[in-house]
Image (cartoon, rainbow, N blue to C red; front, side, top):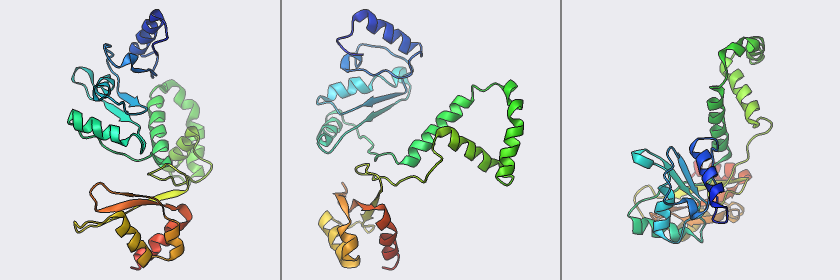
Length: 239
């Protein structure tokens, strides 16, 4: 929904969204204020706005009338300052989370499957008893593993092992590592590089990518290629 859509069409769209006929509404700021839409659980902002007031109006579409809700805002290194500006001007603290890992996506889809299974009527269940028993036998009598197998197949994630993904950039086949001072001391990015060069082989140090300092100045996070991670941790275990 955006400003170039005719008013009557906007009203029809809003009516269907309120009635639950549309589960998702994609909109510009035309839907960020002046609309009372109950039962909106999540608001996703594709980028932080330049004005704090706009952020408040957008996020205010959820948690109406005292209810709870969630607002997710995507940002990049270039727009990070806008997020910090919103926090400062609005007097709030936003929770930072990394790029979802494949495991997170699969677990979320599995929960969606569970919700959809509530629609299955008990009258049809007897038709699947024989198949269910065969599947349990196939898994050595382990009913939990049989159910996991069925859910994996339904979700579409069943053919291959999942690739690791960077928590910093989202790049596949990368593992994000945090090196942190546990004694309350300061540990800058340059300090972390020095530690790596001192205690790890040069080839491993050269494979480090995308290092970022922690806000607490107590360490840094960085990426390693997936096939280098085991070597890195093996060396760590022997320090």
